[in-house]
Structure formats: C-alpha cells, structure tokens
Image 1 (tube, rainbow, N blue to C red):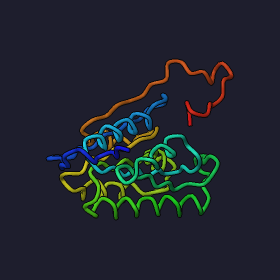
Image 2: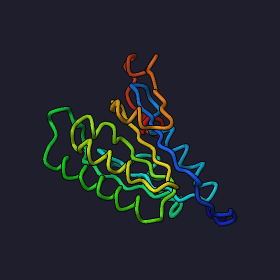
Image 3: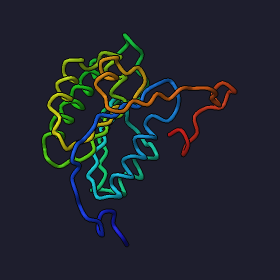
Length: 185
C-alpha cells in the first residue's frame, strides 16, 4: 500500500498566501478540499478546521484515510444556526475552533490551513473580527490559509491574495431535489 507523501520530497512554501472562497453558489468547501488533496500530493501537511460543522460528511471519511497528511477537526453541533439564534454551545465551539486554529498556525506542523465555514462564523458573530484579523496578521510567512463560507467580510476580501466567488445560477433545490449523500455531503 502506498501512503500519501511516502515517496515525495517534503518542502515548505516560500510564501503562503490567503485565499477566500465565498458566494451563494455551491462548491466553496469542495474547492478548498481539492486544494487540500493537491497540497498533500506534493507532501504538504494540511489541517482543515470546520466551523459550525459536524457529522458524517463524505469528505471527512476520505480525509480520515489520508491521515497524517490531511487532518480534519470539526467544531459544530448538529443542526443549523440562524443569525441571532446561536446558542451558548455555538459560541463555545466557535471559540474552540479559533483557539485550535491559533495553536495549529504556530505549531510549525501545518503548510496549508483551511478554515472551513469561518466566513459564516464571522457573519453569525460567533467569533470576533478582531480575533480573525489577529490570526491573519500573525500568520507565519510559509503557511497558506484558506477561508470558506458565504458572507465573507469586505476587509477579508481586501486582505486576501485570491478571492473566488461562487455564484448560483441554477440549483436542483429549486426543482425540489434535496441534498444527496455522496454529492452534497
């Protein structure tokens, strides 16, 4: 059995950038996860921190098989959060996710840090803008950071090196087709 990274030269990025995947269309996390696979394929260490998510997502099952090259840590509860309807548990989990992001970022053990759904955690005010700005401003030079989720704040778009907006043009949901295992989760 060939393990990811077992036959590759390990290297560090010269300069890690800040990427943002946002918008109301499908594919923000999917794009970031594709990048994770590409990075791991070249021997980079990837950590994905999921804000506001938990459960049996297909990608998490796959990433588990790619340990230690790609590690996923989820901080969320089951169910959806509506703006203004967050529970104390939601705030606590988001704070833990942000704390873990700080820890990982300065551990020297990550090359690509994906903060999945952090934009929504900001939008729902589960975490503070100042804390996320501090995270970015104290980012090691050689670490790439990816921010996903709808509602990316304007200051993040300005700070980022790459911004991609996923725009919904057509979605099967409007035809009454719900989420499908293996495709949407």
